Length: 178
Image 1 (tube, rainbow, N blue to C red):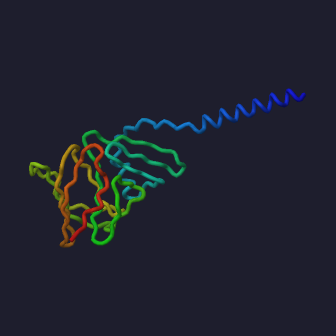
Image 2 (cartoon, rainbow, N blue to C red):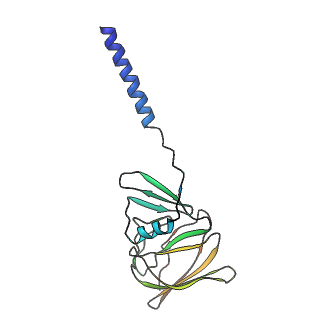
Image 3 (cartoon, one colour):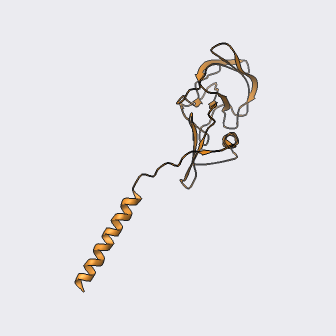
């Protein structure tokens, strides 16, 4: 009887060890989901229509971490680069990779004149754009470009240069309007 109990206990210890080992192995990230609606998904987060614990968007993908800690990764278009700019007067925060769920800018729901041109002086964008409720201006720009940016609001202006190459920042919080 003693041998039987020792055998069962030994088996239980081994089984628990196997389950512990398997449970502590790093999980492999799923391949990014290609979605025709990626721009709508991004906009829904910026407008506050969608929520998540995190929704970080880098130069190649949007990674949404849901409240249940499950993650979904979406591939971004190969020919377009997402960048979100938060012009400010007084308050900003450091940011490199934009988080659609948590980043907040100072000037929400405001109208801005946004002008961009490439290295050759070709106009890439020249229009009035309203910032999102999160205080950011979301833009889908051509990839692999160096761009001059000029933003104007209420008689104040900010000028900067941004680029849209792989691994470039998607969150611009350094454009102070003066």
